[in-house]
Image 1 (cartoon, one colour):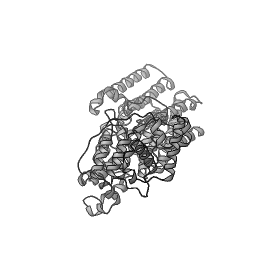
Image 2: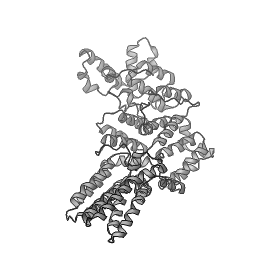
Image 3: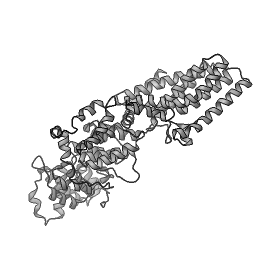
Image 4: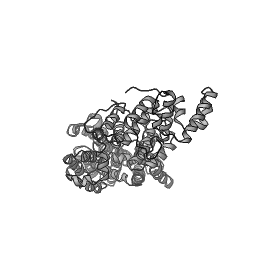
Length: 530
C-alpha cells in the first residue's frame, strides 16, 4: 500500500504535473456569495463546490499531487471498510485497491473534474454512516431520505451508495421479503429522482444521470503528448523561456506545437533566427498555430500567446474571450487575467475593472489583481509602466482583426503601423525563410530594414542573403550588407562540395546540416499562398 501511495504522488508530482497546472489555469474559483450560490443550481452541489475549491490548489508546486494522493488513500480506506461491512472478508483491501486505483486513473483525462472523485468519497462516507444504523426501521427511513439528498450533494455517486446499500441489505443483513421490497423501492427512487429533477437543473437525461462526470471521458491511460505540450505552454506562461527551449529540444514529439513554443521563447530572447527550430517537416507551421473551424479552447488559449506577444492585442483579446467562454467551467483564471491585461492596454478600464474584480475574489490571484488595479484610469501610472509602454508601442493603430490560417498578412499590418516592432519583423522574415521564399525575405528586409545590435545581421539572415545574391547577381545592393568571414567562407565551402558531389545531401549534412543553405536545398517544404 505504501508503494501505491508513493507511486501516485510521484507520478502526479513529477510526470503529470503540467496537466494539473493547465487544469487549474482553466478554472477560476471565486469566494463571492453569488458565485458559490450558483453551485446549488446543479446536482452534486457540495461535491462540485469542494472539488473546485481544492482544484485551485493545483496552482502550488505539489498541490495537485498531494490532493490526488490523499483522495487515493481515502478511496482505498473507504472501499476497504465498505466491502468488509458487506462481506466480512478479511482481505477486502485486495478488492478495494484496484477500485481506488481505477478511480484515480480517471484523472489522466484533462476534463475529468476533482468533483467526481469527491462525489465518490462522499457517497462512501454516507454509506458507512448508513450501515452503522442498527435499527431496521431507522435505516429504512434513513435510506429513503439519503437517496434524494445524496443526489443533490454528490450527483452520480448516489448510485454507488445504492449499490453498496442494497448489497448490505441483501448479504450482510438477513434477506427477507421486507428487505427485498425496501431494495426495490430504493432502486426505483434512485432511477426516477434524476428524471424528476433534470428540468429544474436544465440537464439532458444522460447528463442528469452522469453529472458531474463529463461526456468526453474515454481512456484511462496517461496522455504524455499533451503533457509535453502543457509543459511547454506552462513554462511559457510562468515566464521561463529558457526552460521552454530546453524542453523543446529534449522532446521527440513530432507536432508543430513544439517548434511553435520554441520559436516563441526564442523570439522573447531575441534569438528567433538563431533557434529556428521549425527546420524540417514542420516548415512555417512551426511558427503559427493554424486557426480554423476546428479550434477548441485549448488551441485558442495556445494561439492567443503569439498574438499577445507580437502586440496584436485585439486578436489576443478575441481569442481569449472565446476560449474563456468555451473552457470547461466557463471561467479561466489565466484567460481572465489576459482579458484584464488587454483591456488595460486598450484603455478600456471599466471592462478591465470587471475582470479584476473577479480575480480579487480568488486566493492566488487577488494580489496580482490589486497590483493591476493601480493602472485603472491612471494614464500617468500606465506611462511609467515598462510592460504597458512596450505593448502599446506594438498595438496596431487600426483594428485589423482577421484570424487566418496564415498569420503573415496580420504581421505585415503590425509592421505597417510600427516599423520598430522587431519581434513581428523577425516572425515575418523567418516565416519567409521557412517557406524558402527568398525573394519575399529580401523584399521585407529591404522595406522594413533590420536593427542589428552589431555590424552583422543574424547568421541565418546572412546565409539567406548569400543565396539571394548568388541567384540575383544583377542586384548591386549586396554592398549594403556585411557578411562575417566565417559565414562567407562556409558558403564557399558549401558551394564547392555541393558542386563536387552533384548535390548529395549526405555529403553536406555533417558539416552544414545546421545551415539555412542545407535547409533550402534539401527540405520538402512546399511554399504556401497567403
